[in-house]
Each structure stands twice: as structure tokens, then as C-alpha cells.
Amino acid sequence: MEWWAIGLSIFASNIGTEHFVGQAGAAAATGMPVAIYEWTAGLLIFALGWGLAPMYLGLDLMTVPEWFERRFNKWCRLFLAGISILAYVITKIAASLFAGAVLFDVILEVDMWKSVPVLLVFTAIYSAAGGLKAVMYTDSSQAIIFIVGGIAGCIVALTKIGGVSGMVDTLNDAGLGYFTHTLRPISDIDYPWLGMLLGQPIASVWYWCIDQAVGASFRAQKV
Image 1 (cartoon, one colour):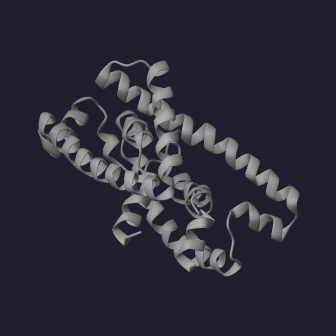
Image 2 (cartoon, rainbow, N blue to C red):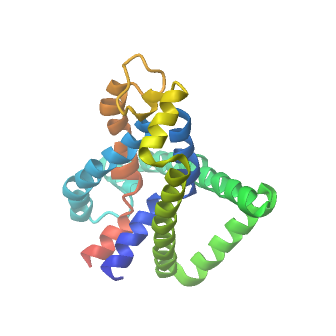
């Protein structure tokens, strides 16, 4: 695959409906601190590239659970694989499908019980028929749509409210001026600064350095 397809595929694999609906919704409900999740992601990607990825390559791993079997035993491998599959279904696939169903409902007025099966069947067909290459080209197209649509949506939203200054004034008038503050007091229930700067990056190591570390891609790069 070309470098641009790999880059766009990685981007689209991370960004999806759970961000455009869920994370954007969280920001609308609570303010700017939710952005810290993505800002720290950049640092953790470097930690993966310079730290864990060379280890995965050196050990010639196909999956992270395989490393657990080498380090401990097969039961640890099966345990981690089981937890990973369960977590993936509950926290990613379900969230993405629900967010996609919300978009279908709002834009096309198609209810969830009709849109979700269509999404699942369509994804399964093109993934099985075209393999990883089809998925990567689809991701590349989606990435362009995400970028263009995200920028357009941001411009339209800010234009309607009078730009950044208009947004700030509106928040201040509503008594929500603190929404623009990224670092909140340690007493804040949702986003205390200590938890966001120390606890959140530690928890995100799983997401960025282990969960997304698909050994097959490392094997392909090595070959």
C-alpha cells in the first residue's frame, strides 16, 4: 500500500461516528477538557512507534495476546484475547453502530433497527470480498470525508454563532464561560486536571499502544 493510503487508513480507523457524535456531544455538554484525550494521543503514538513497536517487530509477534503466552502461559493469552474481544464489541463496535444509527435517524429518518443491520452486512461484505486492501481504500475515502466534513461543519457552526468570539460571548452570557477552560479544578467531577494529565494518559496506553497494535501490520512492514 502507498504511504498516503496507510496514513489515511490509520486516521480513519481512529476517527469515526463515536467522535463526531459522542466526543463532540461530550464537548458540547461539558466543554473543552474532552480534547485532552486526543492531545495526549499524539505523545502515546510516539511511545508506540519508538518504544513498543520495535519490541513487537523484534519478537515477530502477530498479536499482543501472543506476547502474553510467550511471557506467561497460554491461559493468559486466552484471557487477554477474550477480554479484548468483549471490550471491542462493547466499547467500540456497539458505540460506533449506535452513533451511526443516530446519524441515520437524524439525517435520513431511518430508525436504528433498520440502519444497524444494513451497516453490519455492508461492512462484512466489502471486508470479506476485498480483504484488507478494500478496507484501507474505504478508510482512505472516509478519512477525506471526515476531514472535509469536519472542517465544513466547524465553519458553518461558528458562522451561525458569530465566530469564536461569538461562541465565547454566548457561553459567558449563559454562565458557562468555564467551558473554554481545558484544565479544571481538581474538585471537578468530570475532568479534574490531575486525573486528565496523569491518570488519563496511563489508561490510554492500552488504547494507543496495545489495543491498536495489530501485529499483522508490523509483520507486513517488516517483510
